[in-house]
Image (cartoon, rainbow, N blue to C red; front, side, top):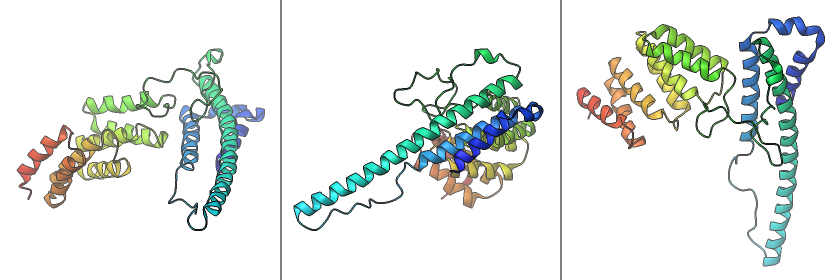
Length: 275
């Protein structure tokens, strides 16, 4: 029930008339952080739908009739549990969507926008059956990923622009701020890669290697995982650690045989005289 408690706490903070002056004092980052808290909590809720081990239903042994009875009993228990979870999720989605709508309203107010132009709030966790069509999604999210928070894409692009302009220190600061403001962002793998590149540009190769390692460890299946792993190998080589760099660079081809970074990793391994 931590999710509902967090939603209620946010609701009280936004709805209390006596706190109007405090609401005005809240920064945009505060409101964005509230939105991301809701996103993280719904992701945790989704994980409850994933299996945690082998099946617990036992149908072996006994006569055919006994086995049928056991299957029927297990099916009834699972059906009841599914209906219970479905009801719980529907209640959370309904309440969470209303709270996000309140946050969007307050965010538009803080930015000086026209609240009368607000569209209907997208259902929390995605469109549900028998609901009205959701507004068109933001075209910037990662493919098949969740919708980005307000300003999330713009903040990421600002950090990337600083990196492209050769402003390593500033880019590193912006990527760090992005990760703090948008925990669990679908752009997190790219932000970690960008942070590593920015730190390298700023001359901090050791911290860059740490960023690459953390990024790949947390997101080994991301679309930038191959580049992250390759750059980790390069950073280790720059730190005069060929013993660590060689297996990392070799792993690029093993894990991502179709990656364009395979040939570059092999060339670097040749320079290092890797076994």
